[in-house]
Image 1 (cartoon, helix red, strand yellow):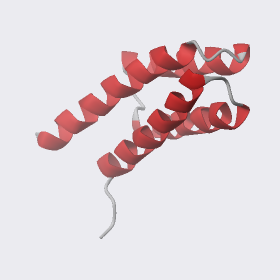
Image 2: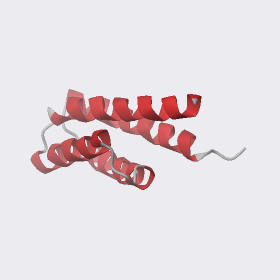
Image 3: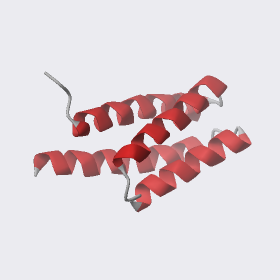
Length: 92
């Protein structure tokens, strides 16, 4: 059975969550680059750029630019809010 767009977004958010959890422990270039790539993939779904997506993208950008894992927790909060939005849309 083919995955729908909501399932794809949830899987991408799950992958992002794992990368951000790793970055909360400490900066790692592999996880940071993967987080950037995953956020770019999410951008295709969130074309209207809701506030949480913009904030997520900005937090990941700051994390990568500054090589500073303190931004991971903020990014994770926004990713969780997006996941909650998608799950609510699925339930409707």
